Image 1 (cartoon, rainbow, N blue to C red):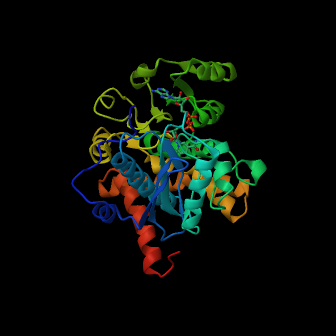
Image 2 (spheres, rainbow, N blue to C red; image 1 turned 90 degrees about the vertical axis):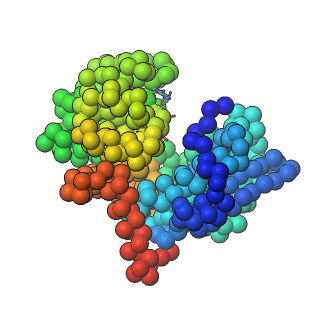
Image 3 (cartoon, rainbow, N blue to C red; image 1 turned 180 degrees about the horizontal axis):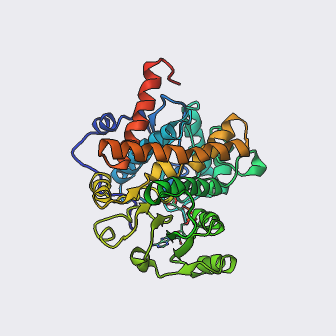
Length: 366
Ligand code: NAD
């Protein structure tokens, strides 16, 4: 089974690794009866409770699962900080095969572990999890976000994620092409899933020329039926399209040594997490090529913004308005990057770290 992660470092102890990445707490959970094996990582709760999804994946080793949860939980701290949310960063992983090993009892047992953190960690849906699984977790803890609307939740986050990507893309277009409108620009979208589908609606409406790829023909056909002008391309051909904007909305690590020389675009702006195969190497490389890369954890925050509103008392309009803020934050990050001659991911990291630090220094920590 392929893994979601790079090889974990072996030389450090767990607490050394936590110290290096800045984690507050890591909870290892096991239950012999249900077969549950899980890790919950609370990275930082300065701004608020640590919110982040639970991922179920058949990790090849415990070390790999730990590596993934530490990396993902840290990413959530940065995402929420940059989005201006009063939330910290956390994440959970369940080690197991989502196709064969799920039971109600396992998820309820997991829910008890989430509950034992007394709200310091709030879980949500991620890779390998379904709404039904979240409903089972919810039976044991109220610290669950992103539930369906009929259960009092905020529902599917992807329209909000897509809207945020659209807003961030417009900001980058302003910088790259001197105009806010995407009309007439060529946008290559990778992934016709939940986010890609909604994003294409915005792009087509604004008059962009959309190229689209997916590995599933039925998803492509559904979009083509709705938007006849969308041009379909083969999965590997997407990197060679004559485009202005590349929008990765499928997988991580698609900006890498192989694809970068092929990507003849001025902007990279998409929903996928961890788009840069190596943040430092490829963050620097896109800058050197004159490509404006809108950091993924900045531009794909619409979903978590929507989740955050669930906690305050759900207000769809307010969630959309806050998601629009991704536009101005993108402009700020692009300006910082240009003025300080640093890659955009680094500018975004610094802005997020500055917000966390200033709240802590002002005695305003959660
Ligand atoms: P999804 O699973 O609904 O869609 C992903 C699509 O990508 C699928 O249609 C799949 O067939 C396609 N795909 C997979 N491999 C591909 C390949 N090699 N080439 C082309 N297409 C391929 O997922 P989603 O909810 O639309 O999320 C898209 C991305 O955005 C993911 O990386 C996700 O982690 C990230 N993201 C999503 C949200 C959200 O609100 N849904 C929030 C933040 C980040």
